[in-house]
Image (tube, rainbow, N blue to C red; front, side):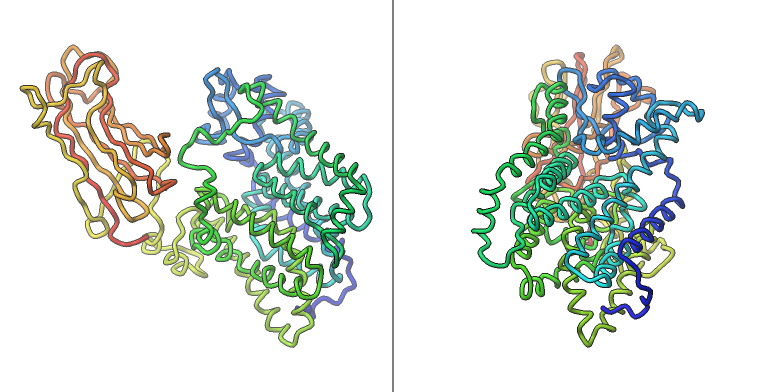
Length: 609
């Protein structure tokens, strides 16, 4: 892939400087006033909780609710897990908070002198933390350039740098939505880890081992599943022959280095263990237990969707990374097979772990599969080998054109994503091709998207007869109950009505369905307690998720007569097809009420999504 247009004898560091300037320039076009939101708010929450409000357990939520009302960093506090002891555990580990800390203290120091509230979320904090993300991104690019120059010429290294920066979702994630997300920082620490792994295997020195240990610690503390990064220094070898003997010799000769690296990694992780112990009483705490609808299912990966789905498949939206996999061939044939196996084993495990997450598309705010961005620091090596091979081939002009087209596609689709043309969560194959190359979207195009899943408690349903087919899911008129009224009696001893308990696989074969229901409720005139609720919820291994309740407004209640309560429920993206849906009426009071005529109807899409 010879670049004829490069004539100037530049150094790789000059290219890095240019890329860093471009990164800052692009970032300046976007207002950073809303950077500390959603997941980032959770990563960051350790700092204001500890150093501003002295409330690491967030047991007093007044300050937090004030911040939520004033700055609206999130619609809900999904970033926290409530414990029985009254404390709240931050869902995410504190790795990013430690990295944010110097910039947080700078913002806290200048906030009031500049006329802003020193509350943790005012404008100085937003700008200083954005600067933090850019600084770490620059560090990552510097170390990536060092890795590439170790293996390749100046021109090959420059081409690979340009491909990764402009041709992958690194560009969008780092500059736009993900400057403060974990992937930017992980990319930088992976680059640091790989470079010092190379240095230690070239010339084993204690200082390189210490940096390796700190890098391993921070990567794990930022995202615990990234602990597989230990495979890189563990499997790496510069020697072409006698791999096992060479590794055993290094471990035996430099065992003190390995102990030092392990100690450094542990030192980085210790603050998290202390935090968990002080807040929850346990040194190890699984913080994703508050939502049974998501988690790691190691025996049920979504690998094909993760790679090839039009929803957010990595190879669909970042096709240029196929070059990196093609580069494994020359790496295996001509160079160090130990490095080949290191990369292959790591990437296979990384893809597998990423695709084991039940919400494998990783929600909104990401273009392509954002979990793969840190691995680009390692995949840059086979990318360099295929680039070298292409530059020496007769078809290099053809491949140069292909690469430029893929870079242009990535930049254009990044723009589409930012302008809501590429949808953040609801992409389908039909919609992708309907809007391919477009700068506007029609209503007909939008009909090809996945169903719009509301985050609100109450959901509405505009059924179109031609799009959904109806069937009766459940009907109970209580004709067989042993009482004269032939109704269901609920009181303090019998709080739950009969209802539905059905597996998703028995409910529908589509990716969603609507359940619309109604029931008659008789409320006595003297009733002054909590009103009954229509409840719908899915359950994974007995734990509920997508729990919704529906009630009659107190102002609409007619006493001493029958009232109608309605339910509108959209099924969630179920974790397993064996997860079961329960629907019933819950009587929260002690006084007796009557239930009759429960009707539940299922609306399932006719077309396959």
